[in-house]
Length: 328
Image 1 (cartoon, rainbow, N blue to C red):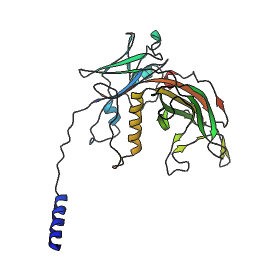
Image 2: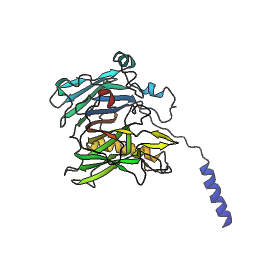
Image 3: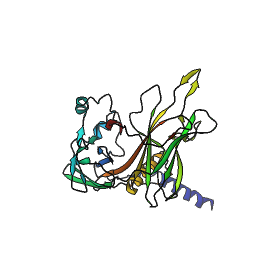
Image 4: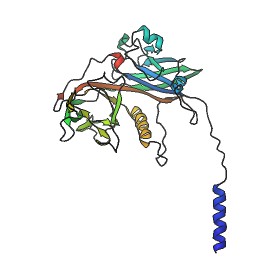
């Protein structure tokens, strides 16, 4: 019996040492689309190319994958078509926006004619058409109405004098599929407001549980489970640190009503990021809505709120002074 056990062990050991050649199929680079359209603002699209899993990532990667030779159009459901313009550094310089608009890479196409025809309207359907390398890529979306929000307010996290969360009271419509994305920019008092919007903790939310109800929700910054405040980082009010008065945060909160395809795409992105490369996590595919490419073309019913972090502050009105270069 011992002899048989030893032979079985040796066979298993030798089989584990066998070299396995993997033939990973590659279909070449694909177009990756991240497109947005919201009421009263220009449609804009980021175009990049997919990169092979084993390809190196360095300081030139973002530049190399940016796409600057596509033609991008948006067609409204009444047949009106706008062509988007590729934004390069030369154009930013000519518009005196180089110091104002900070983008992570040069892959932006934007509708500079959005004010014509009152183009971006709630309830309208919009088709994205992209011509690139002989292919035509399409996608469809619509701009939903703004999420019905009664009020937004600031509430202390606990007994702390200055750590706060932002809360909102929401009247959810009695129809399934009312989803939201929640982002923020923060002015810390000692530096300008964040150049780009940052996702809140649990940035993408659905009404599956609260459909048709009036409910409260809180919004926080994303933290770490091992941090002092856990995964829900607070915003900060006025406080004294090392004998010095530090001014309160001022937050530009963006709450966007989104449809199911847009929600499913961004929720799948969020879940993949949360897995943190965990080899035991459930494998996922991104649920995009693009025909012929990867990514998402989404309509956003957006409400902005200008929120100074002062406990017990209540805000009823949306903030409507957001400039075009501030929507990113």
